[in-house]
Image 1 (cartoon, helix red, strand yellow):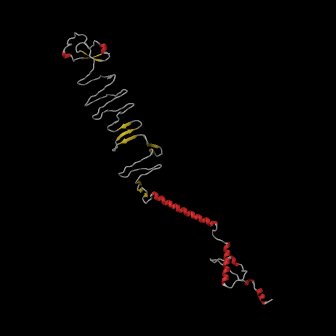
Image 2: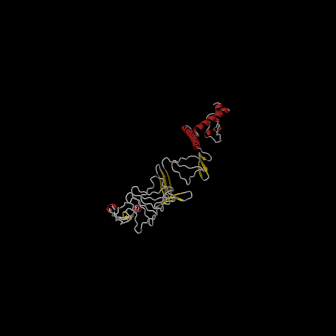
Image 3: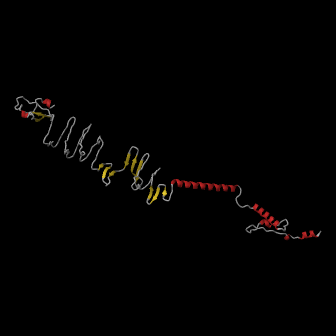
Length: 336
């Protein structure tokens, strides 16, 4: 055996070179603890190449992170979220622009102390709940509906108390008592289930047909307007006036006329009928002929226009000559 082979056999395992590799944080790499089966090159380039190959082998066995289809799904999700965020931001800006949001309110709606102020028109699509609705100072308020308009009030328990309904062809008010008052608070018209009260000084019915009452009218005074006539008329039925004490008909500057088609009756049960006037005229009364032609003063010119008023058994009045019996020769014809 030559000397070269003897020297190779004498080398102990401890004399072999061990290379320990560490990562960038100084941690020991387990793969570097193994004994390198190949001789270590003396140059630094060979050493670095070996270390890099070992490090790459270690990294290929222990991968850290998201790779493959998971990484693609993550990128797609991030892009979708970013796209949705941009759309939401654009829609938010568009809504703010359309509704005209500003520091004072929204569009023509202003936030004022005590409530909201609307400078233009408001369209209410459903219900409007408010404790008070007022117009601007010096401006009218107008409420318009395409079909009907209803205003309701309720009590503390939620039950309906009153209701105002304004439809296309009618106005309905459901209340316990209806009152119409003037600017000073005086009652002009009051209506309840029992009575209807007219508190005005004058009640004027401007209809050409007048006022129609199906039952009875109770009033202390019936008076015509100035320079107008008062006519009480029943075209098809009777007209009756009743009073517990008395009925007075007075005309201070004109006449009182009462006419009928068949019979005009004045009846007093416990008293009498008194006609108090300087002149009482009853024209169109029938005149009866004298009983006989020998009646004195029959041809006296001073007594031709003088008659005596006589009455038949049935109460019918007729005129008779001033001298003689208060009878008619043709009584059957006069008193018929």
